[in-house]
Image 1 (cartoon, rainbow, N blue to C red):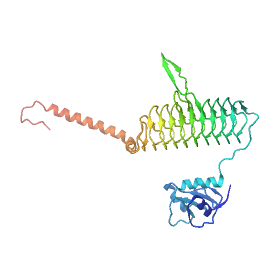
Image 2: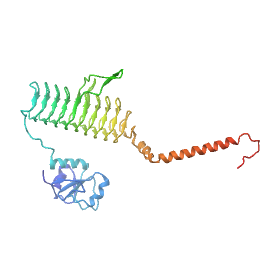
Image 3: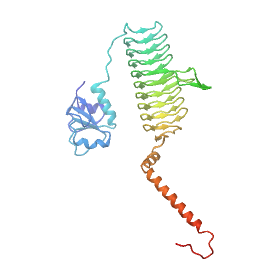
Image 4: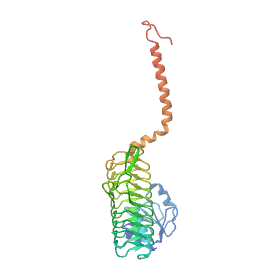
Length: 357
């Protein structure tokens, strides 16, 4: 952990200081928990009132705030600046350099790059290729002919099936499975017959896969996770699905087979997406939505079935009123029936004869 002055941090992230630039910063914390040697950040306006009470040594903000005593670091993108400072002060997780463990089982035909660290009980099958600088933790299985690029981190008990291709700087967290057979069956006379899955999984550069994810190999075409995309825990990607670059899928998302997502899509937790549809670029899908139709570029959809967000907010805001609306409709129907019955009972009277009141 490093110690920096606020002025040094501002210079590092290209920001400006409002207040004392000589404040010493040792760590980072939230506005509510920060101490005098911590730096915090403000990106959500609902926490703005905490600027007046925080004990932080400094706060990263996107604009100047009047009548604030705490020193401020003003940055164009305060959350990105916070990330940069976190990396500078704390760095990412350090990985023990163990070399290649004699307890690892590595095929004679596998190729291992330079400066790799392969822990106990790793299995690397025939013709597999491991790039330079990879960290492979205990219990990992890398199947026949699978390929890893450079500087990958593969956490314990990950399984990478035969033939799958992993790019550079990919992180796969514990217990995830890459390249299992897709959920493909032909049902005939009440029996489900397994269809061979001859595609593979391709994970492009700078992807991170969360814990306990399952990414299926394609039936005929490959399943692809685009460059820079990040998957949370317990995400399931169906056979032949294709994710574009820089997508964010939060925990427990399920994407069915042969569906395509464009680039820079954000998918909230527990979203379900049916198969064989196309989701455009820059699409946002709210948590627990159920997507059953194509979604054009740039849309924000909510609900199940998923609809455009503004329409969805209006529709869902009415739910609390539905019982009263139903009762009022029934009353109106009864009144209409009474009026119709009264009108019908007045038919057939001689002209000029009034209906008794």
